[in-house]
Image (cartoon, rainbow, N blue to C red):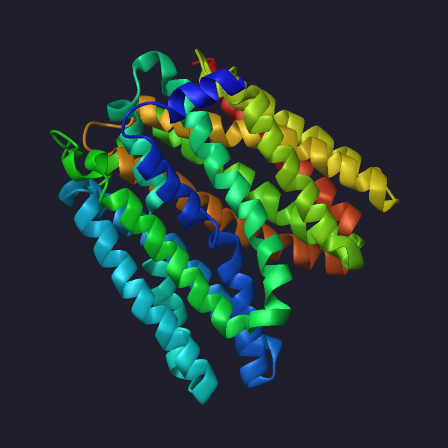
Length: 383
């Protein structure tokens, strides 16, 4: 995407406030889990309990995405986002207090509640784009959403690394709450969000999943999440001391890929386009499995990220075009929840495979899964 298209989107009337809210609310996404892990570990003295707290935080986030998506489509953005972030603020404060008091049960409950009430600001912004930009700028706007999510999520852990020695994990968690609250309030009180309505909803239990396009985007999102989880764990197992560098290589590649090809990849036959991107991820993952030096391995992961970024843009763009009336936010949150859940599943599988057969085998398994998904997407596109 050219810088001109990016600026054209951001200069549209009414865009600056919700866009700023999305950026602000994205910053703590990559920070909160690590801060919770460190706080609980230091308070309870073990990583088992800390890992459980982070796991519940993630499980709550995935569940909350789906629930909030449906509620936003029914009740509007402002009411749901402000209620969610208010409950989250209480949960985050309660988590810090419970950890310092050594009340484990309360820590776990607050972790789950804090995750489930994470405000779905990015999905809400994606739903607002058709009301903020003309149709010709919609592909660029969807790319903007991905960039405004990727960049803060990448910057968040880096900022946390710098700040932790000074402020400690408890203050870092409270700071995450402030950022979530500020971002949600900025977007939810913008004119676009206050006046946003879904229109007539299509009734039925399946909701957004009645759309073939949404199901395709969901498949691609789950595949990408599975790959991320497997590749990240395998990278950490291979180069433990340089795991941060490997994660950063993926994130930087993803950001550049979204900027360079996110808008260009949108168009007809999305299944085939998604299949091509997933296949690119499979090839680069397979190449990474053969690498033995950290620098070359990081380059392979950077190339992996180049395919991952446009995949994220394309899946949400496809959902935006094909979601049933009144189910746009639900479609976005379903795809995001599938990705979060798949990352956790991929990490679990890769950890087990890496322990028994080695990290290279785990990477090869990830590449094999990606090839299979690419074939499925091609078959869907040829129907």
